[in-house]
Amino acid sequence: MCGRMTMRTNPSEIARIFDAELGDSAEFDELGPRYNVAPTQPITVVLQRGDEGRFVEHHRWGLVPAWADSPAAGARMINARAESIATSPAFRASFLRRRCIIPADGFYEWRREGKIKKPFLIHTRDDGPLAFAGIWAPWRDPSTGEWLLSAAVVTTTANATVGELHNRMPAILNDDEWPLWLDPMVADPGLLRDLLHPADDALLRLDAASALVNNANNEGPELLTTPDETEPALTLFG
Image (cartoon, rainbow, N blue to C red):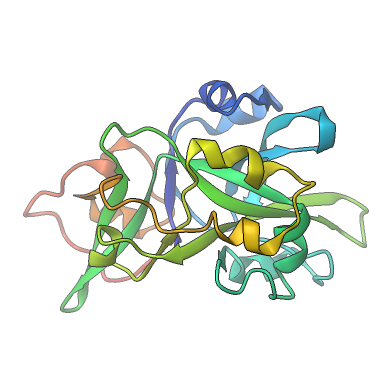
């Protein structure tokens, strides 16, 4: 599962890394670095639109299928399991035609200790952006005609590192796998599923994070600080 993540890398740097064109820069600047991204909030995605090239955009986190009655459906579809993505009614069309990369600097998981859940940040040793496999979908509001773009993180079995906290993790793409995953002309389910493997055990590290992460309304770099022994642990999620 992936239910919280960080997106701290400057969007212009994301565009450079993924050789993509940056969308509305003012929209990205307004959000700034983010330390506690939660479902239904905007997330950064990289996608390819036919022969036009790659683009960095904002989509809502939680995929809203074209047939959904309202955007509320997306709150239950923040993750798509790699094992069933090709057959799921909610995800299969996007898996075959609308794939994206979700560049996150890390994600959070929790370890239960009695009645307390302690958060950990899972990230690389150099704290650089990770290329989460994602899927996206357009949804048109029947009452206004406005379009909503949304996305979901594809998850796979956890590697040994993440497995200390949870049995699932985002499918992280290697840079040589980006072109195949983003190419909308590729629609071979077997070929695509081969990309959705657990990351190498040595790629990621676990660092204790502040209990402030438990509340989705909290933001800022203090969420990444090593918790003090006197810091109260929260037992509920925001």
